[in-house]
Amino acid sequence: MLLLVALLLCLVTVPLAGGRLSALTELRFRRPSLAVVALLTQVLIISILPAAISAFIRRCIWPRTGCWARSCGSTVASRACW
Image (cartoon, rainbow, N blue to C red):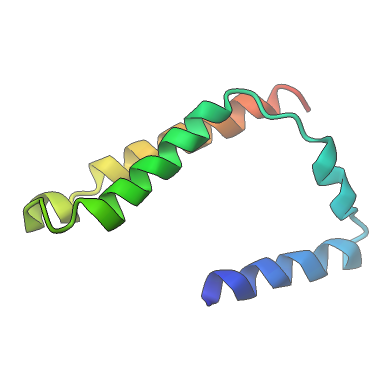
């Protein structure tokens, strides 16, 4: 619910700040596979593995840090197109 409210807030404030939502269609993504792998890893950690792994590993920050690093890598690679 919180993410939905944040998304709606972003959608409302872009036009108010003078931006165009249609500019998002002009974005070209490089290395989208990094973002897909990051998303799939998050789903694996949160939904599939919790019952199968120990509490220590579940709380470990390193797998999630790797997901965010791959997602940031995809964003940085796409930024070169701007």
